[in-house]
Length: 344
Image 1 (cartoon, rainbow, N blue to C red):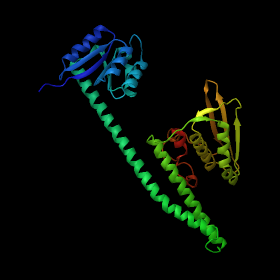
Image 2: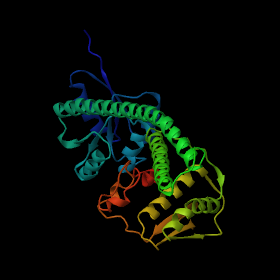
Image 3: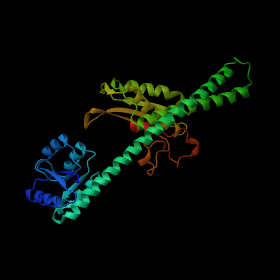
Image 4: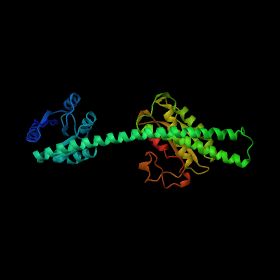
């Protein structure tokens, strides 16, 4: 039976190096079909017409140099494995490229048919494994999303029933209550409300993680959204005697964003500021233009609370992450505030 050839796109501007690689590929087994281009622009056009099994890439071309070369190729062909053809002087850059997603690199002067054949096979196998892992991850996320959605809807029904009956009792519609009974029922109602909030937040976080979170941007006022967030959190701030202050740059124009998501981010950040703040503390919200980028608006939320430890900083945007260094009494909720802020 005739063996099916493997298609390789060789991007190399040096005729001598290109001929050497071609010779090595011709000697490989199974046979390899090689298409050679000398410029990045021609390579991108070739990738637009047909995706090869592998790209052999020189980092320094007439129209592109260094890291930008492999970034452009990876953007055009994200599922195609890339092997860098590097000179001795470019070996450090080639190693950096491997860390950024390139499958392997070879030093031009030392290439043998055996090395090239092995690099080709290993690169294709590793890329296939990565695609398989990514598909598995997506399937797991989809299953988790469906599971959480089903469980959440099942939980909402009994919680709604509990909420309705507790409210009925507190309104006195089932007869008079003692002060102690009223206090107990208010505690139950608070717990039910917190569970409802957790279920809603968990569903939103799962949608964000699976890319199903709806974003509907339009022209909105950042000042109005900050005012809404402060108004929503003011009662909770009053309970802890925490002051909420705002500083808004009057030069801020309307911004193109989803107001619901912006409000969600602001309220979550304020909620964290309240939860981990001391009684009598303060929270400040500032919104201003960015000098280095006139098209961006900078919004910050700072507080006088316990802060975030340096060890926890790299993980604050992880789903369900909570800083265990903080007193357990403050660890309420699911730790989704920063996760929402990082994904929205």
